[in-house]
Length: 406
Image (tube, rainbow, N blue to C red; front, side, top):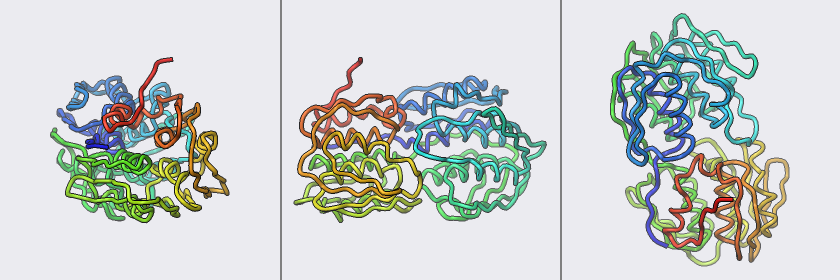
């Protein structure tokens, strides 16, 4: 029980930091989460020749005026999935990019064909060999780009590449996630001309140069959701400050349907218990639908809800590796194609479990908070990729959780 403040957005951070390469003047980014993905991007920008000054929990200043590099090898990209945003940023900056295919969490196929389609439409020539993407354009020119499917990464990458292209680019069937709006606001703060972010049509008028700025990223939507789920799982009374309640409407609706009390204020959400929690059905969708990044923590919560729940994953086909670990803790779960059937149980039990990806780690933390006895969670480096000192935050709310070195 208690009050907690959410960190800055991980999904915004990994887009905004590469975007700073588009400018040849210092840019200061505030409210960044102190997470591994941010550290990895800082290392990459320094290797490209940018001057970076980072003060954890305060600000990051990037001066890319001396950045001449455009080659990013696999030993760097393997640390995070969002390394592919360097393709769009470097194409926008210097018209060429050599970036290895990204690493990050193995949660299924995440092709970048729509990203590359957008780059080609803007005048780039693409070559894919040896695990590297080689992109080059003598001149980046605007175009109309129609995505075959809604793609968050593709939308962001084309926005980056088009910000300094000649003419007016229009992205159709664009993704609408909050961090896409935040990236557009950051680009506009540097002098870009981006309109329509948050809708399915984004218009970008390219400019020759961008100027420096100071920008504060939005709160982390997924950390907010994870804390809401953890509060519901422990039947605690928790108020989460510094969040944006409108970003959480899909989750809030499901928690209310379960019988959890959710109260929203301007920049805070209070989660409280209210009787027995009921089973619900969930289907992940692109924003503003239920986020795929909250599917795994929500699955843990439903393991002890009264009745049978279903969770359908429509975004990533392999986002179920946490299910075996939940079964070890006493959950009754069946996987049928890409739908999980969950029969609520009265009790779960602590067990040694292993994290396989970022949000699976959050799911196991939630399960550990619900379970009787001691849960040992291994491979916690995945959790550190997207959550800032999660054990300290949960401990401040009364959780018995600690990190131990092995």
